[in-house]
Amino acid sequence: MTTAHHAPGEARPGGRTARTRQAVLTAVFEELGDGGFAGLTMEKVAQRSGIHVATLYRRWRCTEGLVCDLLTYLSSDVPLPDSGTLPGDLRELARSIAAFYGEARRRLLIEAVVSAAARDPQAAGVLRSFFDERLALAGRMVQRAVERGELPADTDPEKVMAALGAPFYYRILIARRPVDQDLAASAATAVWAAARAGAYGRAADGPANGASPGG
Amino acid sequence: MTTAHHAPGEARPGGRTARTRQAVLTAVFEELGDGGFAGLTMEKVAQRSGIHVATLYRRWRCTEGLVCDLLTYLSSDVPLPDSGTLPGDLRELARSIAAFYGEARRRLLIEAVVSAAARDPQAAGVLRSFFDERLALAGRMVQRAVERGELPADTDPEKVMAALGAPFYYRILIARRPVDQDLAASAATAVWAAARAGAYGRAADGPANGASPGG
Image: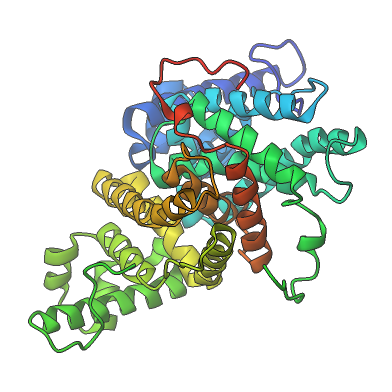
């Protein structure tokens, strides 16, 4: 995802700000690995990163702010594929998600972010916007597939992408087990079959007052 | 789900224990509605329920224990259908899940439970066992479908049921929006199509060292 994140050490105006961010987020990631979200404090992050705690409070406000920013930062590493076919794109993206969450610290991170959202409305807003933005970007994959005639014209791209992500978050947050490439293969196969079967049509997303006869 | 939960006020040995549990869990549910998990304390629950706080600590240990028990208690209200066909069963169960989480307090509850699990290994264990048990029970629906010849013989019932639940938890915890009957219809249609397409085969769940070529 090519957004406004900058590579560490990049020579550009704001490079110092970027370096501070990298130092802080690296420290947050390490702290999460050591003690999970329960053990995370602004003071520990300041100590580990060498950045003054006042800077942390000013820029990130609280540990909830830190974990949300870390999620945004790390997710820029998950590329959106363009292989030429939707099944290929789905498989590739699912593999990338599985690889991303293959690391235990990243599972702790998403757990921390969801946990932060439960306690802090501002973190909840960050989480919602973050995934909205990701879904909109990833939705382009599906739009291309519709244009190629691979899927019904009324397919809702964001529903398809939400369906691809859902099994990973279920596995991590609810089943509480590691993700693996088998889950990725299953998710990609499932979403492709379901999308072809019309499970993600826009029509079903119409006015909430519409009854849905026959389910 | 017919487990060991007893109806409130039931005349049986242990009836007082059951009444205490009901009073306490009702109070927890109301507190969640008022202030979310962030505002939940043992003292507030004691005050609202009229049960001594020492009893709460002895029996539930901490607020994490309370929300996990509440989830178990409430979920006994979600029946497992047996309509005669798997698409029918999937639609019915998905509707029940959507109705269950249609109430905001129940979304707050699952959020609280996941949040509790992030902070407390014992809560994490309760959450995992709870969903394991639910999946195993619900898996019978899928086993019947395999016996009826509706699905490939190597279908993994628990994978199918996890896939049915996943979109709801994604919607609540990640997308952070209400669930509705459209989501239920989409989930049921998707899982049926995906299961028929072989997305939930047992084979893919083999030894983790097996590469998944093309998958």
